Length: 530
Image (cartoon, rainbow, N blue to C red; front, side, top):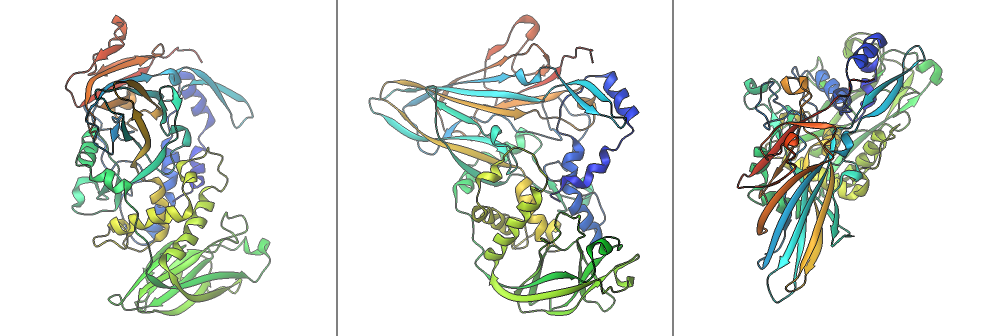
């Protein structure tokens, strides 16, 4: 489900409708729903092959999502609030004053274009739905001794978050180096059919509101988990690796329809566990054995010559009853066997961790295939470290968990490795600060943050997007005063808010009270010109 290219065909819409729509209204540059959906496509296809019927939720989206929510409440795509700074140590003797500024300069109109099917350039106005959030602190040392502490600044993100969106930190105007700490999956799981599905856990369910972040963070356990070492995968496993030798010229093989590899397996499910990687699905054959299936790459496939196909066995060994290639139309078992390829098999023993390292590297290569996107947090994390995050997810939710999510019940490690990279998390940048006795210094943070929004419903129709902050969630600092402000608001209007902002009356800076959560919903002022 890594590949967004699967959904390229969705963009092949009648150009007349596109041009007509663009002529009617100014377009905002919001993360397109089809692009997110593309990440779920391969998982959906694999699950359908496994016989699961239902609505499969894509990573990073919500299992819920109503259309008549109150202002400032749950979002279908919630970017998370601006969290306050905290510290790993006791900071008694220090007083903090905080100001959060929401800078809407990214909302300015700019012209973009695309080439239609007639080769004509079509121009339209657009804007990014980002704000620059500057969360700044004045720190005063009220004691007669220097105080040094490890500052921790949280933000919501995932491994695919662009490096430009990691908070930038300054102390007294000088940029400081930070260390990144990454928390576990912050969301949960939900039924395939909404609330009617009981205890099912087929869907990923990301946090939709600040209240859910409050539940996640207020005990402090989540931060401890982010700072802790990830588990290792030292257990010994038996691995069956399958390969393909092509017996005919590739130009001929490329014309063969529906060429698939089928692996029939016999094993005692009480004594052996079988995980898989590189397979599209699994079914019971006529003899009652489990059959794993996967496509055989053609020359134009991104995984041609690179495909990795594994069955990973824990416990007692299994029997590979049959390994064959089939092609043609109809059900797998009804397709004739083909001699266009020869199936090869290797059995070896290794540790789960060593094998996972191999799979992670291959998975990353497939993600980056043809990608021109900027560097992400994943690029900061070595494959060895990433295996640790995969292990953490496997023990918490996957096949190594005492209560695995149904989403992973068929043992597909492809899905786990992929979703570790895409699921939502709270991350932290940490840095050391020393405040001299009796003196004051400034800590500045700057973060590019995407707005929260709905994909459909009343907010989407009004083009309303949300930004918010929390005043004390997860912090141990003595913050004696908090203010908030907005800047570069010439091209937006604040439709709803509980800060007290009133742009028409010139109120752009406010003293905050005792509320735990402050929010605003904004809309772009449209020029009406295209």
